[in-house]
Image: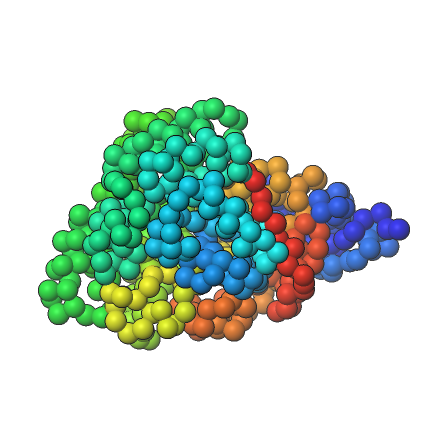
Length: 477
Ligand SMILES: [Zn+2]
């Protein structure tokens, strides 16, 4: 019998908050067992050659939407498969009651087990859930969700008090299936999250989608009155960065008042990032973490409108090249805490050619490490260590996974991805192994791709192919 299960030989390990080190790594029983300058191949049941490659901790894709438009089991099977392509070994998925997902409401103590049952046995990565308490009864469930169900993060959508998801209906109550989904609801939600956070030693937090509904109403009306162009530029004009700034002001003001740790999700514009930075500077005692997505870093409405189609409709909207660069500046200066995909598999047939009914969102999880390495490391001088912090260590720490996920130190889960930093590929839908039949990143040349991804010591992806069975399991946080 071999001493170790898997030996990863010849690579350079990227250790968040430590640095890079030329070392071999060995796994035993799903955990990192040792790091050493030379671990003989004979000591491993199997061996992975990482010569000349970078070995990153498996990414924690902290913003995901399993089951939003398709059955949970289908998304679990096809979309976490895509995660392995991009080096992600854990996904943290948002779930809520109301329209889409399971299209119903009720107590999470009954609905969460249904969700877990549907996903069980289908996922290629480990997974956890963030839940959105949509009504007062669900807010009262928070202590039990934290202590009894392994859910330590929650969500509020600032624009749902005025609109549905696609922004083609203002019947918000039909959409949320809720009573009052307003700032009063947010305040009581923050009180409950703050109390749960204070009650234990793990971070319990609230994630916020920051777009302000009343301002959206005005700007959407103006865009529709001015010829209603069916473009992504029009969609951005209809939900401009000012709506993010105002929502960030509301959310952070209430976070300070209630002592609630918050995560400001998918900051999409220079204005949104500036508003977040100003809030952080003004409220040093308030725990606020900032997230940006791959698409807000890399895509522009100019580029996507030139290609045609509405595949790039997403909330908040795709902005301009200047916004891309402002967000990269926030990544480089350390004010952005993590980068995620906001992956939501949305088929071409759900987009169509009419702007307002088109469903928002698209996939991107397969590009998590590739884009950070190509656009961040190669083009903008981001260090590999910072790449690993943004993709893995920082979201793991924020969401209660530290010690298990987010690093390659002894005792951590043996989740890793071997990256060839010089492998260049042009993005196409088929390359990403997702169920989605189009890709807004199509045609982008990306340099630096995983060539093998390992989940808890098992080789799960290699050279374009997943290696079964799917071994992902639910992680209570
Ligand atoms: Zn999202």
